[in-house]
Image (spheres, one colour):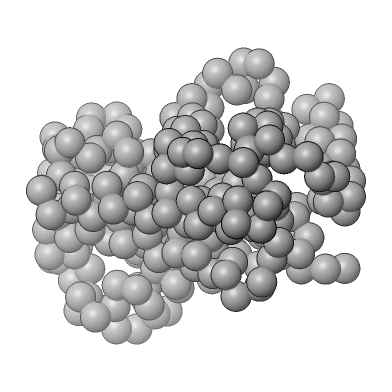
Amino acid sequence: MAAWPIEISEKSFNDAWPLEGKSFWRSVFEMHKDKMEIKNPNIAIGNLEKIFSATFNLANSKGFQAMSLRDLSRETGISMGGLYAYIGSKNDLASVIEGVLRDTIEQISGGLAAYDLEPIESLRAIVYGEIYAMEKLSPWYYFCFMELKGLPREQQQQTLELELRFEGILMNAIQAGVEAGQFICDQPELLASQVTAQLQQWHLKQWKFKLRDIGTQAYAQFVFENLLKCLEYQGELNKIGAAEDASNAAAEHSAVA
């Protein structure tokens, strides 16, 4: 069986990008270890999960700006001194959250260039990959979007650049298709912004999609097919990908039933 991004499915994505469990938290440790006093991953990984999970819970319940490190200490059961061994300040905490998300997007979407995909398959992998990543990292995406105004100016800029970087990856794939004569698009920047906004709805309006019984695969397929209509794409969709869409949609329906 082909691997991601040749095979576009939630399973192949999760196999390629384990965004939960010990392997994910180890990657967070590797990104952040130079700023921590704790250098032993066997000790650090479990506490990092506690710290970030508690941060997201507190940010949702009272807002990140209103949250104090003392609140975080109570929520995690880690002493204030223990917390300082992992983070120097709330700003450090926000910086790590943005950095983890930035590196993840860069690896998943930015790394597609190494596969020499056709433009349409690049777009499929970008759209589906972002939805799949949002499914696993919803609290991280939500934090970077909702807490933007309260962050220091430098971190605000980094978060804005994160969105612009993703739009740039989309624009490059669109432009490649235009140059290959497969797409028609006079305003790739505007189209990339529109698609990015559609994708953001997945983690901002989860309640609405649950209410309407719209699953991950169905929404990804809708955004992708809508994008192709905007690009006036006339070719036949990749049959393997289309079959995978049907298979995943059927699996989602069975799970709901």
